[in-house]
Image 1 (tube, one colour):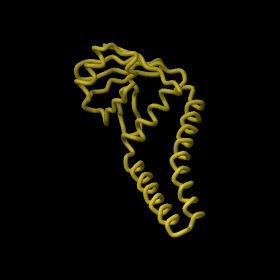
Image 2: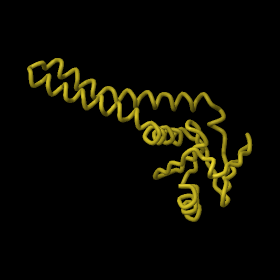
Image 3: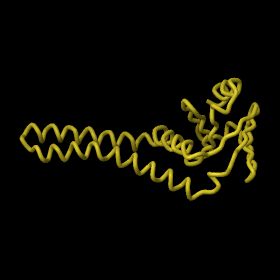
Image 4: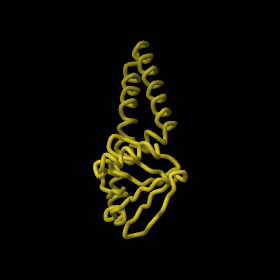
Length: 156
């Protein structure tokens, strides 16, 4: 069974968010705890009559996630635009019982399923991590139903 994938800026965004929420849970928890503590501080500030301080805490609660979101989008766009490799490479994946091949004009890799660092499935993609910071993307829309079932049963 085989399929093709091409990195687009949208696919790179999906990859970044999947990585953030699946592999950096500690970072997300830290931000949530910081927001919850800020909310508690804001409520306390308003309760004791410190409206300006309470307002600052509320602004802080809103700004932190927004800044993280904007920084992530900026980094994705910058990385995509700076890499001709990402913009032009089409990878063909060939899946066998115990391994898969990733073939592009730039090279050829054979990876055993046992050697994968992690596999993340989202609504739209499979991310086959070969290390903690490098993954190959298999786009479900480009896969047959048989291949999607195979991947779910074999590697997840």
